[in-house]
Amino acid sequence: MKSKRIFQVLVMLVLVFSSFGNSQHVSAGPNSATVLGDALVINRDLNIWNGTYIGFVSASIHEKWHLALTESHNFSVTVSTVTGDLVPLLILQDANGNELARGVSTLTTNQPAGDYYIQTQPDSGSGFYVLTLRQIVNVLPSVSTSVNPTSLNVGESAVVTVSLNNVPVDGYTSAEFTCTYDPNVLEASNIALANLFGADAATAINGPANGSFIVAIAGSNGNKATTSGTVFTFNVKGLQAGQASIECKARVSKGDGVLIDLPSTAASLTVVGVAPTFTPIASPTLVVTNTPDASPTPVVTATVDLSATPTFTVTPDLSATPDVSLTPSETPLPTFTSTPIESPTPTFTFTPIVSPTPLPAGALSGQVLASKPVTVSLYNADSTLAASVAANPDGTFTLQAPAGDYTVVATASGFLSAQGSVTLTSGGASTMPTISLLAGDIDNNNVIDQFDAMTLGMSYNTATPTAADLNNDGVINVLDLELLARNYRATGPVAW
Image (cartoon, rainbow, N blue to C red):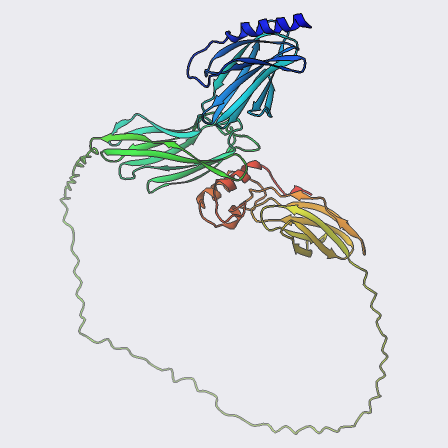
């Protein structure tokens, strides 16, 4: 046991002077050693960012690195085995030795100002290792606008590229871009989407008009933007000389219904020259020459006396003598003799109709989930309505109808309907399975497609039509497009 302690002290003395590195200092302090159980814990200092340190650990030797932060830092500690079969374990502790985090071979964390300790010990094995401390510089996501070329003549065009930068690993489900420019200097057109959100992303475009337009885009069926790159491009044409700023600001969503504003970088475009002047080309004058015929053309003169009053003569035919003589004929009036007939007294027999006792109705209940009010209806075999009820705010419903076979349909504005079959029995209770309606059928044609997205785009930042406000928050925007994109290309009615 005594020789074991001597070996531990020797290793400690070697390691005290074994660190090397460069860059900014983190902390400084004396090295020391303590005994924890059967292990000798060597206390050392991490005093340089991006520094590399050499250490040794085994079942009997652990090392504890002191780290002093004067401000909040996001940093990582990585341990690589140099010799032996060591699998290193890293334990982050606060100033009182309480464990904050741990990791095998690497540990990444964000901590406020204060004193910390990173204890290295074997998860298994033993050996020499190299420890590296790195400060992670957070690069914020952003949106940038660039134009090529940056200078053009009046009447010429340039291409504007809008990109997302430093997209986080978990990605963005949707994004909304509001682009502005000087409409007196530039004219925007030809908005073309890239595939950053997937090949079949749902898009809604509002404008261009009056120097601005909006492009909303959402990955369909679970697709996201997980890398940085171009989102879309558009063209601008110079209308008159001047310098114009082109900027596209962005709000993004990670699928949690929250929009995050991103910092933006604008582009500048210089338009030089004047608009070209078009000189009309004079059209030639067509001259037509007529060669007269030598034959004289007869002239006919008609003289009409308009002063005379025309005379009309009517000669009656007096040869026919009308027959106007009438000889009355005296016809005797008929004489009627009335003989009363005694009718027998009618006898009425009443047979009471006994109505059958109505059978008790059957009940149907269930739950339909949607972000809009839901109506549940029962239809007979001939498609006539048998019963209907508005679901509760949580989607639960109960309705009653006579015993029989029915088609049950659940509907909500802007959603694909759900349809199923149910048989109700007298006095019985039936339950439909819980179902979620699919958002996005804004035009109510049982398919969710680009036409629904176009309707959403035309109504962007308004409240009507209400069918386009899919999340029912009172405004039509990219969050509604995000709901639509989840069910892009789906058709209905959905089987219930």
